[in-house]
Image (cartoon, rainbow, N blue to C red; front, side):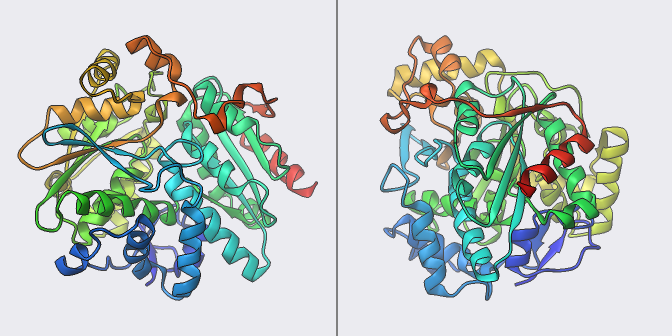
Length: 462
């Protein structure tokens, strides 16, 4: 298995190099040169297996020779040992044909743990074998940063720098990033929004002298290993609901498109997914793009679902690569237009290809709050605002096919929004009850690439 860039000019890499590199040197994102298919019989055989067994079966074809079967099984076991539910990703029924996939039972109470805990173990195994050291830099709208810090804190071969938008993440999200005491983790509060943080990370990767000098590695959802880990729970959920013998649809609250693109990979592997529904908040660039064919950025409006307050959805580039017939030159052209003009027009053929797989919807702030209130009254399930966006959109698109909405975070990560909607302030799990008693450690920076690079060089030299 080799991996190629969505922009067509970077060298192809094996899995290990792809994982440690993150962003391709031509600015593109890595994808496998082919997507291995599973037969209906192989999918049916997953029924009744543990999450770890399903993870091995789904991911093993993508790993190549990087890890032996025994080593990869051990990596998977360590990755999910700290989850708070034996099913790892349990399904809860909301209505006759509507199910919630709870993805918040990991160490930081968000779906990002499924990928980040695995990546932490993969990095540790690969770097211990080579003796190399890397500098991980990532941007977060809230959950990626805390999950990355939790996964890499204290590891000997890694320094971790996480950029988050100052004042635009929840208190719980911020404290999960700023309270760890390990010297190898660094929380950086950036003046700006998530897109500001993401642009700084991409600029650092495109500065090859800096990139090579600090051995830069990325763990944002630009990293293929992140997407691969998230493919697994589409299989575990669909098989629980009768796949491959009946199709299933998924609604995914998404801002950066990584989580729903994992569903696309599952579908390409043979999982009978009827529709993948993009659920956006009022920062609805993905919904507008699918409706009109115009991907046009505009200002980000802060919402009660802050992890989705994004205008530049990095992983959408991967979907475009497939929609444009794996034409790297065409993708490079539209990405250049996005950078220079703030938008681009999707070709008619590519738009039709996207619409064959994806549907979309939007939830306003009032609709998000209403979904929290109604779902609790009807089922007793408390939703975080991001999950509530998904539930609202899913309710408008239900059919005879079972619909699974991804619950992306624990409601206690967003207690103010939940309390405002339903009058109940959800509590953190007991193991995190002292989070607000711990001192915080962070550095605030302006949107200044040079200052950021200087700080990183100084910190890793200590």
